[in-house]
Amino acid sequence: MTGRKRSAQDDVQPGGQRKYQKTNEKKKAKRAERSENFDMSIQINKTMRTMDGRLLADFMARQVKHFSPKISSMEMEELRVPEAAFSDKSQTFEDRTLEQLPEFIEHSTEKSRQQLMQAPSEKGCPHMLVLCPAGQRAADLVRALRPYQTKAITVAKLFAKHIKLKESIETVTKTKMNIGVGTPQRVIDLIDAGALKIEHLEHIVIDGSWCGLKKRTIFDIKEIALPLMKLLTRPDIKKRYQKDEDSDLKKLEIIVF
Image (tube, rainbow, N blue to C red; front, side, top):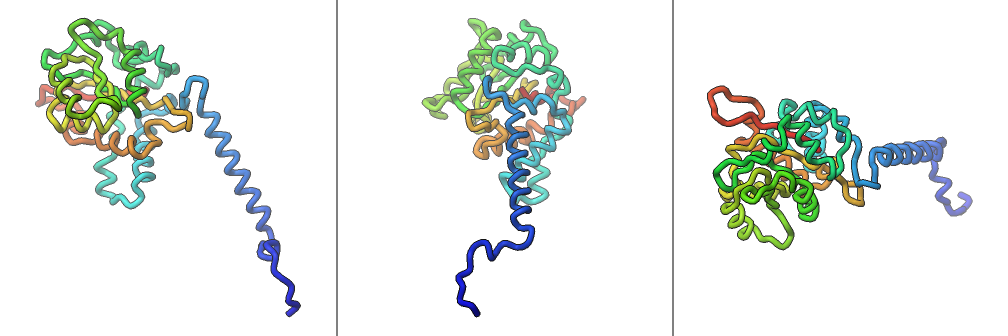
């Protein structure tokens, strides 16, 4: 024994430095590729518009697994949104800015502005829900959807940080609405409370392309993504992705904005 102190370099295996460099290069390439997917001048993830129903269903399933690594196969299947649930029309529409939202909705639903301005006679019973990640974003979306509001029919904001659930329940039960805008968990709470009714619901629009400054969309935030999947796969919603000829309920469709 020479008594020489071991240095960090002594522990490097032959080729170890090269492997480290390759790993680093792969990580840099992945980060660069991810950065190319975003247009931060308008805070948009451009990849969402390239996904069809199959890709969206697989992507959402991967996110569930990512956030719940110990989830069982049975639970995983229950939270899987079927491919048939997604609209195949939204893919052909490239622009996903707030200014383009009304045109995007009319294009994806194949409904005119006049049709979308209509509302069921029952209060708290929209024909469309728009799901977003935060209260401020909900406010922005409501403003963008003002063209569908009339004196008698409201584009309803279902969530805001300063509005407690009890207040929201009282407001929803008194409001005739065509479109409701809110976060997934607040929508779940309102449905469970019996305030928000889904009998006339035809479309669920997910605010999927918008991202915050940290480049996270609604699908990338665990506290938002998991409630979103739970909402989309509720038995009373999931069964309506296929038209039931014996039911008066209309087929329900998911549109990713």
